[in-house]
Image: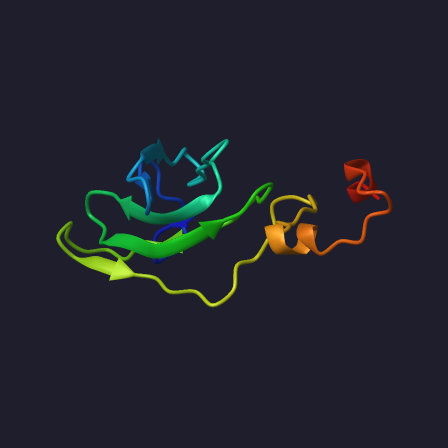
Length: 125
């Protein structure tokens, strides 16, 4: 959700999600209730920038998105000129939008799993 200082939804704010390593860009715009979504985003590190005329721009420097992750980020835009930029740094992400469970398994963890007979289907258990 994108809101203004009074807590009202900001419609028409432009969000830009940029991959840090590849520079690929995805854009979306908030709807009438201030909600936005990026669908099918590949796992990587991203920066997120929010801009709307009459408000200061907000930038979230690095978002690390993993496989099967649904991340929720709410922002409040301050009233100001377009030339001002605010950088948001958060210490903890809150997963409030879904009840999905998932995790990333590192290659080293897979290599260290004990397998009987080296049958790869044993990894499923």
